[in-house]
Image (cartoon, rainbow over all chains, first blue to last red; front, side, top):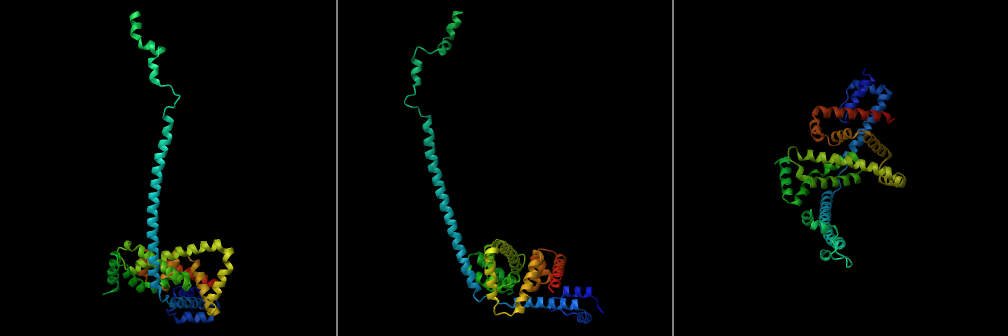
Length: 142
Length: 185
């Protein structure tokens, strides 16, 4: 007579179709827990068998091709949209670049009340520069 | 001409721009993919949606198929990975929608199974509960082995494992499955 452990081992290998040896069957008939396990295992495999029998929907191929078409169209639209967005972004960046350069350069332009530096060289009050310019004369004086 | 060589010709045609040739591949493998999806989703509507997604993904990634293995092996690989991802998403969605749609989901389930007998419904729930409790790799192994009836060698190819490793994985999966069945008393 086979024991419970052996029966459990047998049921692990059991796939719903394979045969179980007579001795194990005899043990299953006598042992309540093994009997329950066997019944549940059979029920489990029967459920799998029923699920396997389910047929795929009849127009699945048509459905797949239609979905594929849709996905590809969406892909093209998204691609085009991305390209257009890129163009818009580059355009905006260019415009901003031009305007910002104009705007920031305004600060470097001389204001109307800024004294014209060229006049400075024609004044007599040149200060320290005058001395520096006449450095040779200073040497001569020495 | 055998299927494998035929598949490669069709794939070449598709890659050369003949999109309609893909219909042949879809028709050839739709039942297999659908059955595999049933193993993960356990209801025909979700399985059909997932099958559609699998074929779209496969079409988009067709250029990555090198032809080293059978097309069916490659397709199974895409399918199981997508199924696992889909289940993860479902779980996340269920977590966030638990309080909002809990009753609604139950109502849908009730309507869907209204015609089925209670015993069959219980069996379905048991299968779903047991398979969902397994780790992802073990679930993949069980579905490929029990639903698609792949041999250990084919299973190893799909899972990217050695034959020994796939046998061991399948044994662990069945063993865990039995522990869960034992708890179902």
